[in-house]
Amino acid sequence: MMKPVWVFDLDNTLHNATPHIFPHINRGMTAYLQQHLGLDEQAASELRVHYWRQYGATLSGMMKHHGTDPEHFLWHTHQFPELHKMVLREPRLRHMLLKLPGRKLVFSNAPQHYARAVLKLLRVDDLFDDVFALEQARFRPKPEAAGFMRLLRKHRLNPARCVMVEDSAENLQTAKRLGMRTVWVDGTPRLPTYVDVKIRNVMELPRALSRLI
Image 1: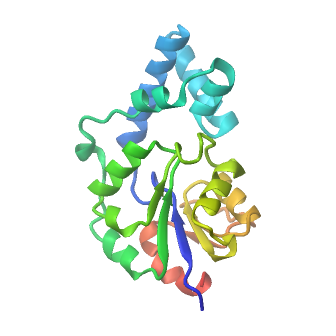
Image 2: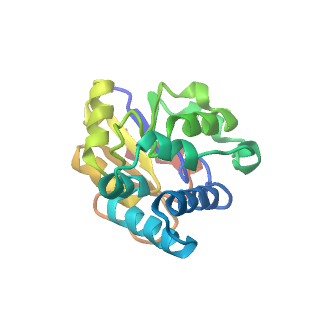
């Protein structure tokens, strides 16, 4: 049987970004909107959330409605002088990934410099064939199909061989529509029809192998 190609999301899939990293990014984006759109803090925060909910990424709304330079936005909103103190590393993550047969890729809505820095701190950067970040998706973030299609074309992948591992149900819906198998990393009781396997934590993935390959 052909080995699968594992496509991993990064934040809140391979590590827990909720306690430290997401609040830092949110503050950075709010400050960016304040500075560049002339908004007060509350209005900037509300607009940031609105664009995130409507488009899947605040950046998409900024580009669509304000002509924002995506590289400028990503650089200024993803500055982490103390990232090493913020990344919560699961010591067994490397061992778990080594158990999975087949190639492994990261597909993240984050910028390249941040994604690579996090993977290095997690001590798993050498286990992935590619880090396909927002720049490589031409700033078309998940759940848009355009980014997925660029990933598939770049690596000449048959989506039927791919297993997408994600904490975002919306992103998995796109993956499933394209023909990928889907793993949802989530603790709620809900099980959408487009999810093949649900696990509470990525460390449970090896136990789900028989249902995926």
